Length: 305
Length: 305
Figure 1 (cartoon, rainbow over the protein chains, first blue to last red):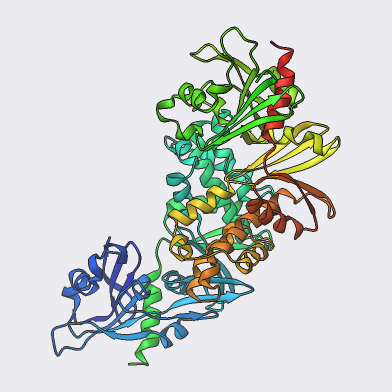
Figure 2 (figure 1 turned 135 degrees about the vertical axis):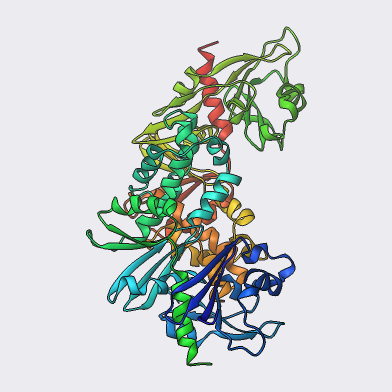
């Protein structure tokens, strides 16, 4: 393992992704476990850390690789709290504000900060997605790019010459989940299967200017009046929500513009369908780019050691 | 009790409101119980009916008043199912489609239908609110009126010369509730008190064209970054939701137009604040007008007996 230069851990709410990386940033080995911070009993992150990557750690006295942790592990609910730093921010500013910590076993760690934004009465935070965005810099090149990371809390970010200038969170996935589980729409959706037709109907409905709230009840009323097949209700709701998110996020883009998407194809495909309805192109940057973002921070941190 | 002409029951999801009414439509006596259809064990509506208004029923052989039931009692989950009739509709068309039923005790009942709407891929239903709208006809007079009934499922309806032409449901109250109880926003709102400042900030935020989904996460991020006082988070969310509902509902109204509101002052006051921000006047029609609506149906039903 003499070639290991960086151990990078993207430690989120639900998953822990760990990467053993070489001097040139190539990934020598990767591990992925459902050991997100919410799954760690009694906050015993030390134990989880050693369980997942204990065998990657050097013997006492050997040259230690730089160990960098990013994602929700640096939140108040995590292991060591790292601050949010305000936008605009680039990998160097993240590295500048990383927190130095040490495990009980004596290993030195760096904890990446999150990003914050506060303007015009709007407040936002991200912690983890910025690593994926910075991890895509090599693919993106200079200039201005709009990035989309769909999910439970979708993030849309404006990147300009490698600097995150602005971003916004849409609680799209979580809203789908709470409506399905806890609202009157749940009973209607219960036995729905995936339906492209339902999804397209949902996208079409929110193309009107009436807004999301004006359409949600159609999920129930449409099923009741049998104007919306029961099979389609869940996908229709998904179309309403993703369509609303995308309509908001791309509303100032000129037709022919490009949106860059990072994420699981299941989600990015739906997002792409919503985006292209606005005459905007989509470019898929990959399913996961966080390891490269952590490596960029590690490069910035070398000068701080 | 010889003067009793009509027994009118507005039997909803959470409450049962009963009215003993004279020939001229005046209310001789009213009762209000938390005996909505969701509170009736084992669907024993017969028992609840006799418990609440048994002493209003005439002795055998006497002239019986007309008994009319409206609201969710006529839904599939209710006592006797009455259909939804499509808009446009007036009190006479509701009366024409009322269902004749009979209690186990032999009392003849009429069950009011609900209203449905299906156009341009949008579907909607109401059951109960139409009685309140028709109950306000005497106050409204002829012409075109936009009515608002705020609540768990707010209803906005266009009334034209006594005919409901169009309506739309906004799941505003329910959305507040599921977000508060079941989403990540809940922990932030938990200890919030009512705050006018928070409500106004929420209204202001959704005056942008970014849409509701773009602002929800501010409830959490604002509290985290301390740009939104924790005390204000719940009212801020309330402002976001009510502001979104109202912005959608009044979007085609000319400034100086009027919206007529029916409902509990706690809710109608908030709604009024959101409406007046658009330069539109509000007129409060009363807290509850359903008894008069049921009486209008009863008048139509006299010719059917």
